[in-house]
Image (cartoon, rainbow, N blue to C red; front, side, top):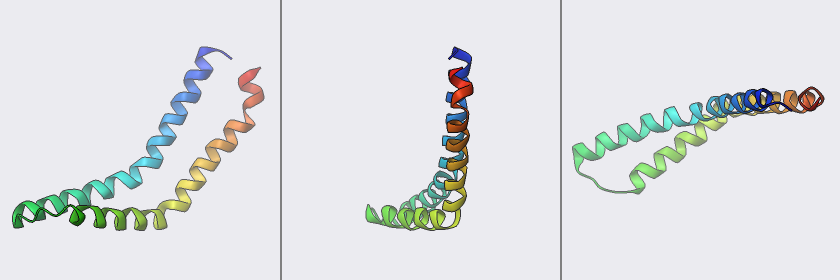
Length: 89
C-alpha cells in the first residue's frame, strides 16, 4: 500500500464527508441566521428559540435527503470494500 493510495482513499473519504454534511449544515445555518436576526430585532434572548427550529429543520432535511445520503455512503463503502485487493496488492 503506497502513500498515494492512502492519500487517494483519504481524499475520497473527505469529499464524501463534505457531501454528506452540506445538506444538513446549509439549511441549519440559514435557519440559525433567521432566528438570530429575529432575536436581535425583538431582543428575545431565549436559547430554546434557536434550538427547536434547528432540530425540526434537521429532521425535515433527513427525511427528504436522507435516502440519497445513505445511498452515497453505501456506494462509497461498497466501492472501498470491492477495491481492497487492488489497494493492498
